[in-house]
Length: 386
Image (cartoon, rainbow, N blue to C red; front, side, top):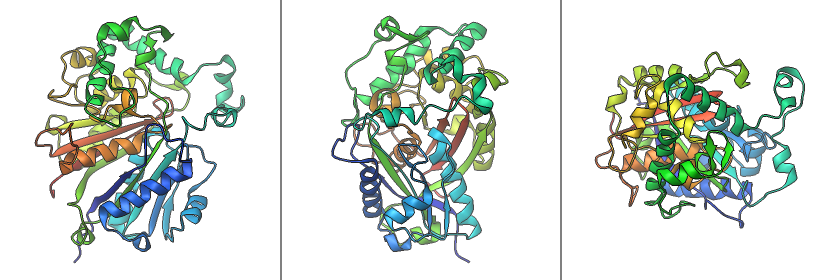
């Protein structure tokens, strides 16, 4: 019997973080070509396709994009999970591969959000003032201010300080300094983060993610098929997905996200625990996003995230390096960054993260966050067969 264990066999990033020569379509095409070349998979072998369209908007759905890219699939998905879409897609693709619904799945994302600044793009993110959103949107909260409220609540309940949040930005910048493609690589200090002008208290400019261009592609297939391909397979050991709310006013607890659900589930499926992990790629739309996910995933207890990060554990050479490519805070954030978390994880596990390689990396976790910490997806990856 053939081994239908799901593995990642190909990855590709488009030109980032600033690429005025590429449209959102161009980012996807370039990333796909690079993933195909990386893996040795033929485009004709792809029978599963997953995407949320361009720039993270459902302007071009999975059927439209498959037509444009000429992907002849028999299984597809285009559900919009925001920044955790790629993690959710890996979770769902793994199940589809195990079940025999398809053999080789392509996952893509592309965005020209920075270079194509326009009113049409920005207005695409403004929901109508009706239905459930009508309770909040008329009062004008931004995505940033919603996350700022989560940070304020965490500070109120647990004594978390702005200096502890700043450590997340500083550690991320340290990783970015080792990535020649990162947008911001200059040294950053706690004092600079704390003294920066407030944008939405307690956030200053360095607590908030960048706006960049970029895209990525991932190829998944069976362990059996991977034997004939270029790269050593990266094993999908455990994964989980959770949706807890849309409006932050409906969060049961503004200091708890779906990471508290997906963390235990993913680790249980992998037969692992947080202390086994060599590195973590965690969605960093804001500094508080990282802290909430670290707590929810079980790397520290609820409310202890401040002291946990303050120790320097997330920095290069720390016990748990986080966002080793520089993250959304310093490297790139093209609207949705979930696919970057997975690709960086694969590079680390292959030993191909030149200049920023985590020594002897065998196990890693990618945790995406979409909406207002609304959708959380976690994927545990390993370099060795389980």
